[in-house]
Image (cartoon, rainbow, N blue to C red; front, top):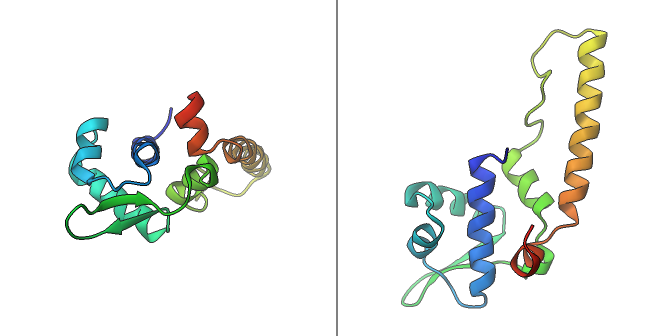
Length: 130
């Protein structure tokens, strides 16, 4: 299952990619993608701080991708939104051999997931679907 934070961010980024190079108002993305507007504004702020989107102010302003869609991978987006150590099943647990084995297994699975997502760009989603 994809966390809503990641799903909504990817949907918003794909909407910006489809509209590129024109800017898109956040409310238009929220309406078109059925994302709660307040939540989307928070996500866009995080994506802006990460230099994935830019804001153009003034008449005709809105959001635009900071880089071409072909240069933005899902792996980069997931890393940004998950943060370091996200979803570690052994985080904060007791240190024993079974927990350490689980942690190594989880790390390998997460690396494989991110390696796969690193090969998928926003442009791929726009043109071919997932």
